[in-house]
Image (tube, rainbow, N blue to C red):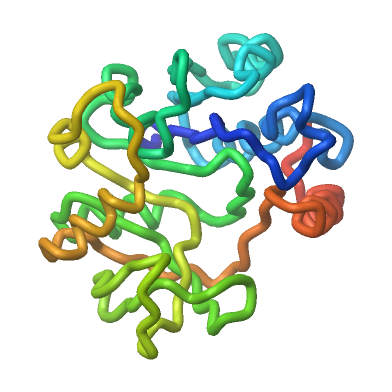
Length: 237
């Protein structure tokens, strides 16, 4: 199946990777011999993506110069820039809505999520809900568990509140319809987590449990792990 448009949130400052990211954005950090964004795009093409919207901020022009129109990755890549100030994950998506359309997938620019994407989309459509969050049975291993998940629904999600029922963590792949974002003001910073929280409170956020661990380049340790993984399992150029 062809996936809905995919938004990649890649506008942050990447302070944990400095000094590497003093002069380049995180998406351009070399992983397994090439900029990380190249690995993400090839994986998305493998999974049936056609349109990818890169939400960029800090040094984002470097990403656009490297990726171009995306055709060499088999994709149609479009760009949404935060502008004079960073808009946060939610604000960046709000600004990119004209490029994304009525429904879209969401990835973070520092995550490599090597899974089958089509079943996630099918599960979300079957749910009839406004959004979906993929979750992983974390049990406190990779980071602090922040999700209560049961029978295809997200019952609680918080990065602040600790609930003993939390056994899962936000995996990093989400799906949204445009509606929850259009209710937010344009060109104002806000976090995607606030949208997810509102959907949970309204009983409108589906959940999908994945069995594969995630890889990320947000920290030096994560970067080293992801480099090793992609050298062995990455999609060939």
